[in-house]
Image (cartoon, rainbow, N blue to C red; front, side):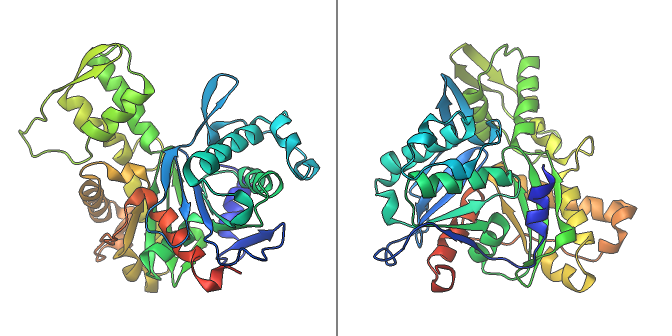
Length: 368
């Protein structure tokens, strides 16, 4: 992760929104804002004030005959100010990432929103695990090619505060490519409590692929792997002596058998102490970095966000691992006596950030 992303996330005090205007908003003040969250795996889009996105689609684009996740596209330098109003240059630019951004936005506006882009302001949800340059290009494309009158940006951890409605919490994000934990005290992110790890859904699917190969599956494409990960795997181990049933699965390359080993142990990498910090380490480290007088309030409201948190038994396994590391690791002795608990919310973890931005965008105080 680049230094500028971390500095932006942690620096500058409490910032709810960063707003940039490119045109007059006369006549559109009463229209709902478009809320857009382009995640590493999925893109969520809809209108402010609504409780679910209008569409959730893969963050993929077609470019030169290949399918790419938009955050994986090479980040190329370009003179963004050289883009002309009306945008013919944007489509024809040699910048691969800009072309991909344009392709994704075109699909979102024409197929899913079906509204005129110049009639609606836009609020972007900015992930702290994505590069700052990506959002600079996204904002420019929206302003100069799509004629969006105003683009507002909200950081993802701040959006969660709006969704939960609680001033004190600890946010654990476990998504497609990486995970992070950060403490929030009185709605302010605590700078030194931010910790990152690469243990996320990608790691689980890599482990799942290895175990399926051990069980005789020679070739499993990415779509089948995703489907098996979502439908067959779980994080919580069954009781001693209980074996998860082997289930058949039909792929384009033939039938495969998904065994207990693949279903149960693929997710162990999330809680392993090998390599990057485990998820329980992220939470414990964030609590250690939280001021003592705030630890109790923060530890009792752990908020889980990100698609990987949907794994069956994820919450229970994580709480067990967290309590175990606090009780048995001397490095976390000062945390003993806390009673970590998860905050129950009415929203699903994979759309929590979008919901928070939707709420914020509908408030008069944030739609200036």
